Length: 358
Image 1 (cartoon, rainbow, N blue to C red):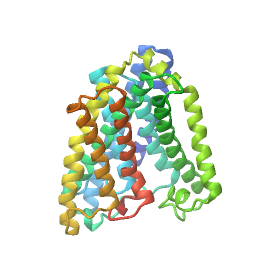
Image 2 (spheres, one colour):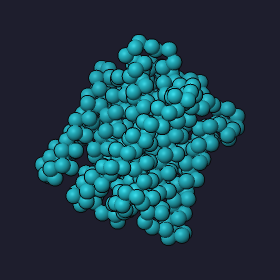
Image 3 (tube, one colour):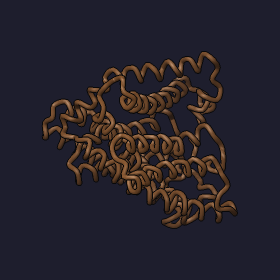
Image 4 (cartoon, one colour):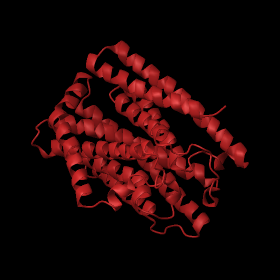
């Protein structure tokens, strides 16, 4: 059995769950929220089944051991695994905190990740594993890194909602910061999808391996102006309607205290996982694959930057006793660094981790 139909079903299910979650936010009816959670769970089950099938097929095709055959060796596989981790995080948040406010964004990100693959023609074939990846450290390093990324994504959602509730004055720095940050995230994701769709619809497969890179590497004056205008348009829209988000959050019973706690706990889970899996295990694997623990490769450098930001966040909480907006802003910045570490480095820079590109 092929994993592709199950991945497609999961993607459609997540997008459907997103719509139902939004309906729940608008109506506030518990039955609608339960339906949304149920659809997300069924989609997650399809997603899990698809991932297990691909893992088994990978192992059989190349006669690899269990630890060497986890299918997260390219951007396609890493995207579907990241989406899986993100939905798992949302399920845990709903179970422990009875909070459904994360569902819409988590389902949207997971659905878009899978739809992004389907609409762009990205290869879904199981590809030969590169020599550097033939190691038992693949499971330990890569999988733990993506679990940490998903935990940081949960912290980002909670942090943005916390900032949205903390200051509703449209002229305040906090309001401008969170709307600008969220706008940057939405604009970047939308730009990547639009760029890929244009190339796919025109039949231009040349350069598909670096879809969004050209927008920045080869941008002239007019392109830069379009990028700035596009971003400012998204920011202006979100700035104008930003209080709608905070109103919906309050309607669902979310409080600043709960959101700050969720941000802290998500980072507290993600940080040690990222430290061990992303940095320590990565360094050990690098020594075995390339002969040195650290080479200041762009991925390594940005992983260290991300680690330092979250270390600063936890230091502020533990040692300095920081609370409220000041420390929450650091968590938001940390996730922006996480996204650049995960996707931006592969698209805009080159290095030893170039096999993680499209």
